[in-house]
Amino acid sequence: MTFANPLGLLGLLSLPVILGIHLYHRRFPPLEIAGLHLWAVESEVRLAGRRRDRLPITLTLILELLAALFLTLIISQPRFGEVDSVTHLVAVLDDSASMSGGPPGEATFREQAIGELRQRMDEYGSDSVVTLIQSGARPVMLAGPAVPWSEAETRLSQWQPQATRHNFAPAWDLAQQVADQTGQLLFLTDHVPTTETNPAAMEIISVGRKLENVAVTTAVWEFDAATGVGNVHLRLTNLGEEAADAQVTGRSGSTPIFEKAITIPAGGKSALNLTVPGGVGKLNIDVTSPRDGLVLDNRVQLIEPQVRTVGVAVELPEGPARDLFRRSLQALPNVAVVSADAADLIVTTSDRLPAAESNAWWLGIGPLNPSEAARKAAKNLIGPYVIEKENPLLDGVTLAGVIWAGVQPVTQEATPLISVGKTPLLAQLVGTRAAAYLLNIDLEQSSLSESPDWPILISNLIELRRSDLPGLNRWNYRLGEGVRFRLYNGLVDPAGESDPKPLMLVHDGGQRTLPRGSVIDILPPNTAGVYEIREGESTVGRFAVNFEDAEESNLKLLFPGGRQPAQPNPTALYQIDPKYSWILVAATFLTLVLLLLNWWVVKSPRTAA
Image 1: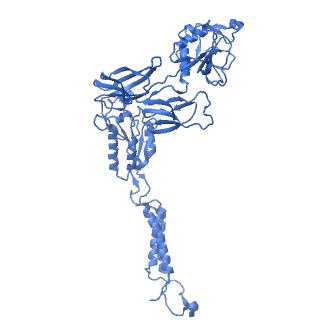
Image 2: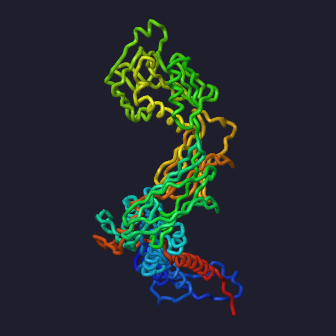
Image 3: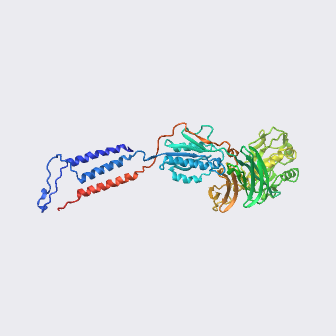
């Protein structure tokens, strides 16, 4: 037995003090007489001095000794062996999708890992505690810290591994912090890491097995607005060592859309291009193979892409430049020529600057000064051109051999994107509400419109504007990809101060609040499925997230085994609240009872028989 407060044992010195008081305190037996009032001051007579008598064993003495003993025990806080210490297991669970796999018809690796964990806790005893940490790019404490196994076991139903390949180090670091010097470290996985980067005190147990597997590694749904027909492109990969027969089916709800049988060679890939009618909305694709070891990568949910038409207003004066721009737009998909009031992009002369309140993008084309004198004074350049390659507007633009004609001084405040020396040739205006670009050129004299760079530049501009339209610009993502959503044009929320409705991200019965703003960046989802963005009760966007990770789908490298810790696990045990605290409460209560009883015994009058 140990004591949390050993100095409290000094209270035992009160025992001999109590004995001494009772030993030297002379007591007189009570003398019962009649007419006590006649005795006056002689009613009680004490002899002078002290002398030692035989220790009187009285009820008062016993009560006082017991009270002093109980008070001493309460103050010293005794610890009886290891009653208040238990084993603390800190287990890291591999959340990789491969943990959901397993031999057909047998327990999955996840179920085997839970069985191993249950057996380990049975060995430690029912009083032991456990902390469960789920690995991932952002580790999650699934249960804990230091909770009973009964509580942790109920939390395991939430562990459904489906993460892509990731680094285990963040989860290991968290486990070390939780374990400190009192926890047993354990990592449950389906393969033993090839390098010993795990904590030295961590034990590794692998429950994996080498398995055959067929996976969907690419799934793309494209829609042609001109024909009203969609095309689904699939890539199936056989990650096994034997040829695999697979059945591919696509359904919209309960309606069959396509069905195809395919044989994939060992270690090979097969591509499928499937036609899907427009208006399907959502497509569920399943791939079945008899010896498949992982179901998660055989299922794909795709959301039908939406047509996002860019309205362009061409307000150039009649002439070659206007005809050129119109022909360039006709070659691009999902572009409509509209009036300026309904336009997403306005193409006009450089002297007609965009309105301050307009949300439409703007492209002003030179000459900057259309006067005859200014056009004659303009310069013709052949490079070399400085191109801002990091700007997506200039992706693929080289300007090789281009003669840039009609260059004039730029007086507006602008950021150069293409320049020669200090002269901007293509620049983005500063201080406008929407994106505004200035093209310092005379298209009738320049060779830019005849080069391959012209259609690339116009296509980049249209696609950038399309991606900036309200709503999603993609509807199907891989796990680990971030999602960007534009709620409204411009920087001002049209809801204003009229109590805007909350914006929610809904998935599989759960939901979380998204911050309102012009552009909303959603963190990469860690669960596959269909997500909805809702504003109040209205759905303003819907997208699908699928598991497409060929590296994680490769089950050929899984094997059972383990690795013992490089250094012994801590011998210290996790301290919990004393289970005998009720004993201290009882001792305190008894002490009070004894003190009250002693007071009653001393003060109670005695009567004659």
